[in-house]
Amino acid sequence: MLLRTLESRRITLVAATAELLETDLESHSALANLLGAEVPDNWPPDLYERQAMKFALQQLHEDPKLPGWSFWYMLSKTSDQPQLLGLCGFKGRPDDTGSVEIGYSVLEQYQAQGYATEAVTRLLAWAFSHQNVKEVSAETLPHLRQSIRVMEKNGFSLTGAGSEHGVIRYAVKKTDGR
Image 1 (cartoon, rainbow, N blue to C red):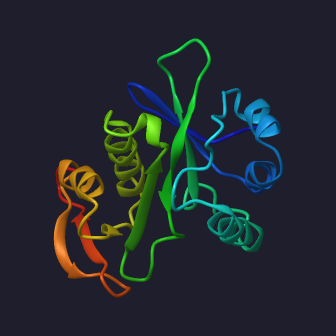
Image 2 (spheres, helix red, strand yellow):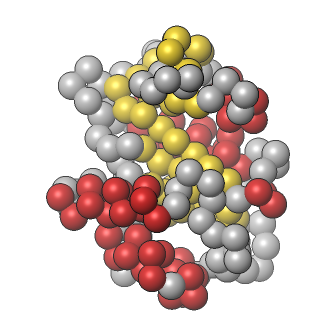
């Protein structure tokens, strides 16, 4: 199976396909074989449980050209056997205004090591390489300081209330330098 990947210094991002998500929902050992990586026992990370995976799978079935605008599996490059660190990605294609929402979650044992920041940096570059993308946004809860820090390190600014009660929204716009 040919997989779309993005590389950074310490991680490889692998775009989710329907086959990867179906396998993820069925068997961690089969997912490990497809990704060529070790899948930790506490997989999946917070916020990316079965319901989120099924939603992404439905999107991929409805739009087979969606890979890239859905989940990306985050794998380490720093050990002999790559480790599955977390998931990140977009909540669909950019809207008519050129805005797309990003999300990310890292397994507990890999948090606070810069992996989410590195993944978001790479996904921002990928998103802004598309002419129609003018803004990338993210939503979080105000008490999730690590998540906010990931956004701030990537140039996101607080824009106000999010789409749900108690949630706040951050965004970064495409600039001439991006």
